[in-house]
Image 1 (cartoon, rainbow, N blue to C red):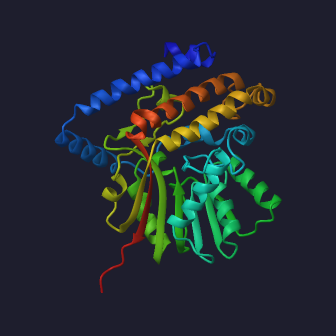
Image 2: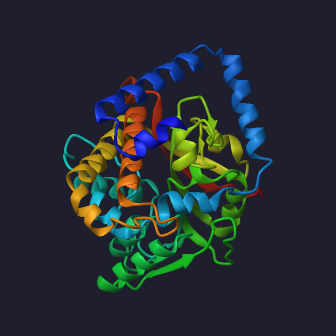
Image 3: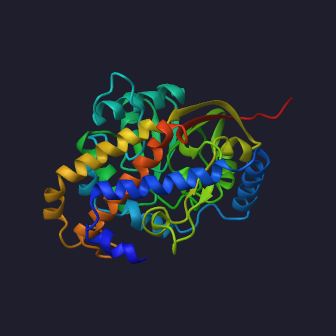
Length: 348
């Protein structure tokens, strides 16, 4: 698109970027607010019917290139020391990104009902924040974590070796190809399900991977009722550069998809929390931009040799866009949602 060049060169002031993003969100919300309840139900049904026609994932290589094969030093610079690459919960006592991430990891372990000694599977390692946290907190648990990124696998291996953590197994595999004959007491996945095209197929697999008393805990972001696929790479900047093949689910999608897993609990948290997380990442990006450029002035992305300045300008807009989205209407349009599913046992 014509504006890509301006974005890539950093020619649009940040205030103008925010203005354009907020204007676009205002038009988007005005359009979907005109829908009747019947139209919304029909859209949700069509959304489910469509995704059920697909395999587990599409465009997986694009997602890797856009986020997960970026050199780890970039994320070490903008994330907290936990390397948590997902939305966190900011309570009144959490004033920093570090505190918020620690607090949220504590919440994950509580909500997923993990006990020391549980066998644990994490789907979508990220940079290891959850698996490393769980390995330290539950030293008698064996943790298997699955990533489709070689750079993430290498980073987690280095971190666990450095910290003398020996109860984590790191597997590199596309999630659609991953198989295991093991049974797990807890399976967790943080903000990976939005990158799936047919999550029901994975949930059917997860049912077989859970022990009889096992639990599945996931975190996803969701609009309160309007779902969306990110497929239009010609017209959508976000679809083109950062979320190709992804989806924005609606609240309740995942319990609508599954009959073999039983929804035990759910928690919907205001999007304001993700807004705070994104603004913290953006702050770190802006104040540390010279440091980042000095390290990646030629090839911040190994896959396509995009220069550091171009990538940072794109990433800045990505953070601004997501931040304003989750902040919209004081965080009451888009939410961060935790779901806890139990295995539905056959009646005797």
